[in-house]
Length: 392
Ligand SMILES: *Cc1c(COP(=O)(O)O)cnc(C)c1O
Image 1 (cartoon, rainbow, N blue to C red):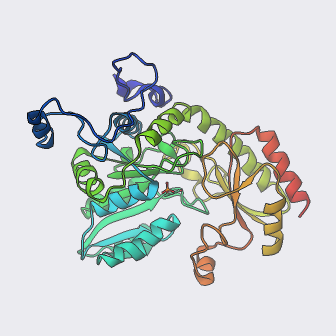
Image 2: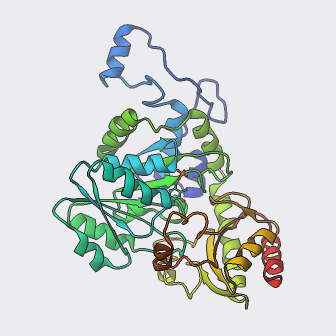
Image 3: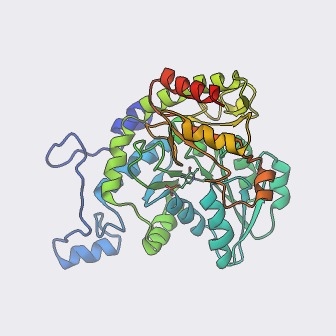
C-alpha cells in the first residue's frame, strides 16, 4: 500500500508502526541496551535467529522508524541513519573499498568528502581520481582494473552544476562499479537517484531532512545486500551511528519536508530571478534559471531546483565581505536547508582548504557568495538583498 502514497503523505506516515500506548507521535526510545527475557533469547538475537533489539549501536526502535521512512522516500530496500553526513559518506565508501582499490569522484565535492578521500582513505592505500562528472568520456578514461566506486553530488556546491544520473549509473553498471550519490541538496522529494539506477544514496540529514538547524546527522540508502555490510559491519564496528534523540528530532522535522521544500523552491526561484536582473550582480548560479547549464535536467531528473543559490557580485573581495556583514535578515553561517536564510563566502569559508590556484581552477572567486533561502517571507528576503546591493 505504502508505495502508492505520494511522498507528501509518506513523510508523515511511512515507516510508522503503532506503539503499545497508542501515542500518535513515535515515542523516543532513549535506551542504550535492551533486556532479554532469558539467556536463550539473547543468544537467538545475536545469532540473528530471532528479530528484536540488542544494543542501540546495532539498532533502536526510534532510529528504525526513521530508517524505514527514508527508505520509503528514496525507494531503496534499506536505510541506515548515521551520526553525521560524513559518517554516511565514510560508511558507504568503507563498505566498498579496501587497500589497493581505486575510487573515481567528481572533482567538485563537499569539502570534508574531499578531505576524507585525499587524507583518510589514502592512509589505507585507497587511490582516488578526481574528474569532471559532466564529461562522461573523462569518467570512462579514468577507470582502471582496480576501480570499484563512482562518487558524486548533484547539484554540486558552489556552482550547482548538475550531472546526468542515468548516464553515471549506465557507466557504473557497464564496468561493474558501485555508484554513490550524495543527494543532500535535493532530498528524495526532489530527486531519487536509485530510480535512475544509482546503487547507494547518502544524505547529510543535518540540512533539509531535519530542516531546523538543531541536529547533525546523516543517512545511507541501499539494497539489502549492501546494507548488510554498511550497517552490520562498517557502522557496527566503526560506530558512527545516530543518537535516538536526534533520530526523533529528524522524524519530527520530516513531517513538514514537503511543505518546507515548496516554500524553499518558490522563494529561491524568485530570488534567483531578482538577482539575475540586478546590475550589481554579474553572475547567478541556480539550476532553475534558463541561463544555467543544468536547467535541462530540471523537471526531469530533479523535480525542482532546490533552495541554494550562488552568485557573483560586481565587487572585489573587500566590498563582497562588507556586503555580507551589512546584509540584513541573513545569518552568516555555513549549512543549508534551515528555516533561517544563510549566507557564506566560499573562498574564505567552505572552500578555504583549497589553495588560491585550486580555487581559481574551480572558479571560486573572491566575489562569489552562496545563500541558502530560508522560510521567511520572500518579499523580506528580496528587500534585504536589494538594500544590501544598493549599498555596494
Ligand atoms: C553538509 C554536507 C555534508 C556533510 O554532512 P554533515 O552532516 O555536516 O556531516 C555532506 N555532503 C553535503 C553535500 C553537505 O552539504
